[in-house]
Image (cartoon, rainbow, N blue to C red; front, side, top):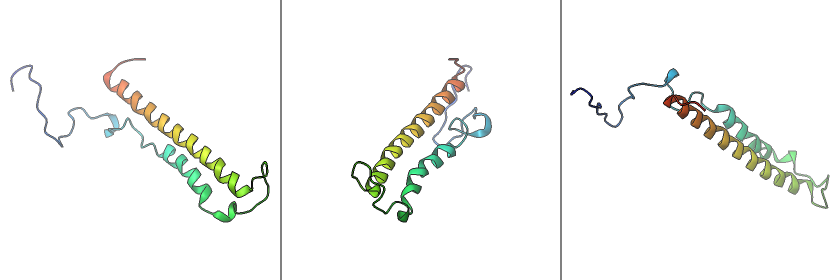
Length: 101
């Protein structure tokens, strides 16, 4: 190789300088946020938990407003999980480049 030449890499080659811990996602698997996203799913998994009429909210049966509330909670949880993972990826990129905030 000529001095100053950048070595060529082929698809599938390992990076020359792996991240500490050998991870390519900024460390950690994000399992906590994935588990958090299971909460709204778990709320629907057992219908006898919410399959009733009372208590009513503004005349709407419990089963309906319970499900609607979990749709809103699911949106919030998904948004938070996306934000958190994106933040972690950005922080990992800043650390790799050696830039400060």
